[in-house]
Length: 419
Image 1: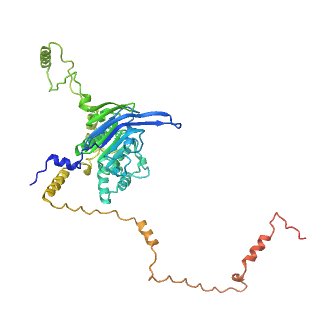
Image 2 (image 1 turned 45 degrees about the horizontal axis):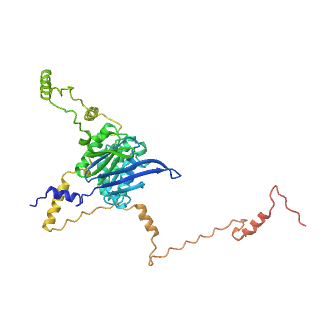
Image 3 (image 1 turned 90 degrees about the vertical axis):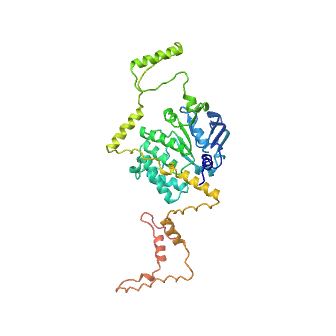
């Protein structure tokens, strides 16, 4: 039996390339007015790299240039100066779009479509076959908790529900690069926690995630590295441990201690440090409000209390999870390659059934074949016998009657006298 090392598996996943997914060099964007005068410098000489399988945080207050940077990475805005590369290509290259999932800051959705139609529409844009689309739609609706509201028009959704369906459309193509701009805006604590868990799970699976937010608590729990922007410039960059760890104090966590034990520990600390250090504060751990809120909601769900809002989201969609099937497939492919066996054929996919309207139009436009019988002539209408005294109007010259009527003077206009 052939053993596949972790290095081989990682090489297969990365496609044999370890180049950065996103590279920005001296990126600058200046918005100008009608007279081409500088109105706002949104991004100023920004340089950063985002590596494969990394969850990267783009942080900063409102107006710091986060959304502008994302739009330039997506090719929606042209930079004033600097260079950008996404998957080693310019951001305007259409070929890389199918590998990107994007959740904008505002949910731009068609209000007359329901949730299922919205996901089906975006799945068609990516060329996903009919069976795969339907399976992914079912899984995503369960994941974001909108299965019960899947047939309601999007215009009837609350802002939080629109963010949920927006997140689902960003994942319909199983992207290699997921860009989330303020993903938790408008979400309740349940949705916020679910989005953070999803980001962590996608990072473990090997996806590259770019997360933009000004809510630091949402980013702190799930990013590997981050950059803090202010005024369009990078003010600090690094991992969470590098940026958040404090070296001026030490925290010791233990089970509940009595007062005598705490006094003894304080005495030992003072003796060892010669009075330079001591216990500053003794307190019991405190739960986060988010944890309390989730416990209350979970208890209500167990008690089967009805609600007209969204339900607590289910598990992450199967096609977004790494259940070990990917590793088994990689092991099998590498083993077959070493033995020289041909790769298994791809299973047949069932295409979407053709549209009935298109089929009918094609049938109507098709030319008749040469050997088709000519259409039968219209049957003659038998002449209806006239009653005595009835005038035969078939031989009346209607043109003469029309000329007489045109020459006849109106009620208010008198005829001119004849000389």
